[in-house]
Length: 323
Image 1 (cartoon, rainbow, N blue to C red):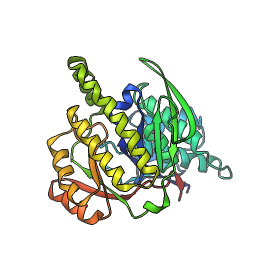
Image 2 (cartoon, rainbow, N blue to C red):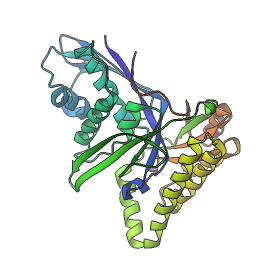
Image 3 (cartoon, one colour):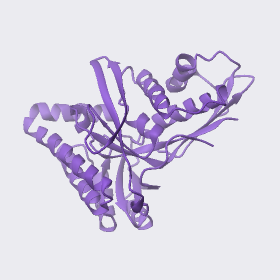
């Protein structure tokens, strides 16, 4: 039974500013989605009848990517990610299922992570009616630290370019990576889930409306871009204190854009005394925050006291892999 695992992701910098062409920086996390497939007498997903219309990511990969016409499949999915929380759960599902299908149909062929990332991105775009950033799918497929921008980013290593025709026009992205120094292996990320979903589309629209009404707020996009560059430089140099300072500064800019919430702020404030830096991660409005720390147990306890649900991860996990 071919089985594959794809990690979720956490955004360190660039939320909302990426919509305006600035870089977004994401890291793969230890938690993710495992998918296994095997031939069966009928189509099944997690033990129940598979209904294609309810699972557009999986259906797209079966029909449009692999053009599969073989016997029915029994698909098993196991996720350790919070759903709809900005952790890239649907991207991880697409990557893990794509990898499992590849192993099922082409057991002797090596998996190409770039092709997988593009496959998963197309599944995301289909499910989201033509709109999807490659950030989640690229980070999940490649692992480590991924930088997504409208152009190549100095200080990073370029991996591939991708594009998508959206209802608003053609979009193009450059996918780059930063090699995480081995010397910071004792650093942990603690992700705290607020308990409510992160409404990405609504939060992006809220920021757009805020900027149209108060054009001066566009300065925060430039501030986030500058913070992102500083954070990347700190990460590349293994400077955890600098990385944490950039995370703190990014959270304050996101608060000025009114995308944080009282629950996220409470978890961030609870984590900071035991962390090098903490911020909301993702679109905001709900979803998660993240803290960088040497004491993940203490930070997890603080987040729980503040009403959140914590997950601990190393900084920059491995990408898609077979199990």
